Image (tube, rainbow, N blue to C red; front, side, top):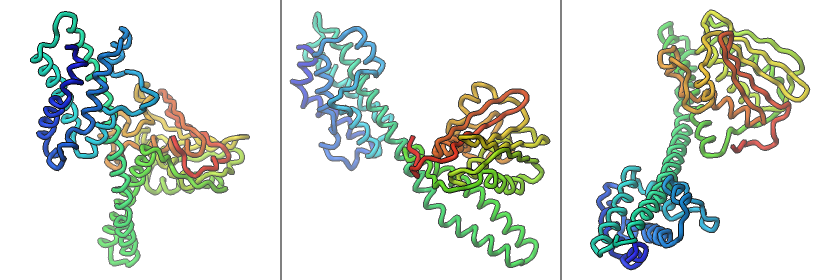
Length: 381
């Protein structure tokens, strides 16, 4: 009997063994009913049987072995993909997902061979079956991973949001203590609380913005008439206070009026200048240049120091990426490696872009912003 016919004829026996194995995947399987344990197993097996009975070209075989089978227009989500999402939601892990497919493969082939399968001319069915299982596994793993990633991003977003209220209370209390003038020790302790709270606030803001972008919501902006040079100057004053001896210079040319979100521009600049201070030469000034053109405004942040290697430069705007030697640099504990990623997302939310170049003479990050941000208040990637 051909394998496709065997799967259809012995569906219940195969499903019974699938269910028996799935029940051992604890603790996730503990609360599931027999029907839930079988989940989409029948549909997956039916798809495999149909695949085995369908003529296949050599290229199609190669594509399937690599998990690249064509997507059906009538069924954009396969049973294997849906199965993966449900497993992720029920608390199974990736190893348990893969174990299910290993068990399914072994059960079908064992039962088939026990029935006298793989006779002359039917050995090709084994290869076809393995390819089909590999394709289903690939689909499941891809969807499982995306579901886990989404759950993680939601968790980060909720955590960051809920942490804001107690943090604001701590900061307000610290500011209140500082105003009471209770003596040098109390004032020093209050100042430490204020600085630490500000660092935590920055980390939470970065985490929340990252979560929004990963969930497809983008960076929220509220455009209004602002003078970009004034916004930049205000942020640089705060950075000079925060970084003490580091010299940060500003040069402004042309008309710098625009319709944009001033608070977000400050956040973007803070990330770019903070990065320049962290990785630049401590004795050399960080140069910020704001230039008003006919259609756009550019902000260039330049620092002296070692060049960023090309392999690092091409990934510098990716989330959770840090520059060379970041672990040993002062202030590295205050960063999640999201600053440049969020700076780029803020620029894109305004309809602009950020690019970077680096050589032995200088490293320059240049932001290009249109004079008027898009009308929409949320940027979707």
